[in-house]
Length: 495
Image (spheres, rainbow, N blue to C red):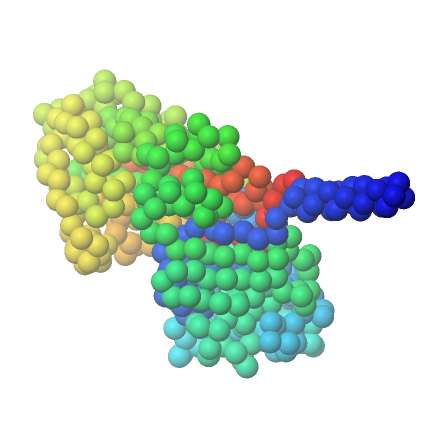
């Protein structure tokens, strides 16, 4: 009887221990909330950010990849060399890499992917990224040589975009609905209008993912996002749509509220060819008259980072120029007087249909009125904005976030809607394009930032915040968004 009791006690102790271990084991699944459903899942055939949010680094990989700081890292290419003239890139590929359908990845797939992206029939949304490429050749199964028409210092970064991921000829045409990549996850189910399910790939060539399963749950409404997090139906919203609701999560220790930056430089875009904005003194006067912190507080509920040029604060080459044009109405009035406009003037402010633009526009109009600049606010839809402002250049001022990564070179385009034409700035960008040396590139990128600030080309307002909310036990999600992605490769639950 005693022996039987002892056996039962031992068995109960073991069972209790096993249950405790099971209860303490970290989860290996994750439910990620996203606002928009992707139109399809081929990042080489569409511009929608919602595509890369799901597939970048998770399902598809490129020769290089962009990390959380915006720096270029190796991916399918484990190393590379660049010729002295900057026109020949030789990539050494990882060996033993397979696509999710079991086919091998090798140099022939690189040739196919890049020729497809830049070919005449290409529907790649960023085809211009590949224009500098002259030829792509497979030296052997694991070596690829890319020859350029001219030095292009940003080529390694360009190859890290979602638009430059590697695809196979066997599956390229069906990637929109059945994506086949080389990444640590593969798609297992897509329930249209509801969710997309990914599972860990057992044949992944690199470091395996910590998660066994990830589900991207589509929750478009801000109130529904709030409810789903509070109920535990969704574990994380890497981009939470309603910053005004964040204080509720900040007060709840079950959640982490993580504020980072995006590639969204939000600017008071200025028509530099339109009088009186062709006078740098007028542009500087406006810069001193705008209380940018009040815009962040009033229009963005306190979320955003002050900027002084067109460059993301999370990038290693960033320099903080946000204090150069301090809020000083006396300086602003003095500059207008120097420009012969002490009585002020009238101008048009075209506002696209985003909350940040419409709310910011009201604050800016109030600020500029204090120095005699009266703005006529003209609200337009995106179609009209693209036609009249962006393409037609028929505007004085507008407010928009430029979300493309590393796009400071747009200021070197004569036909761009800012109409900023400066030979010194163009020379900086030309030199930048001609070098791949990181130290030299950093020096030139910083010169470019300073030049745009000195010329007050636009009113540099703030960097759009990446407002993330997730379960406090989750680690590995990006705070910043240098590319439009939800990278799950390092995500795990803490015990």
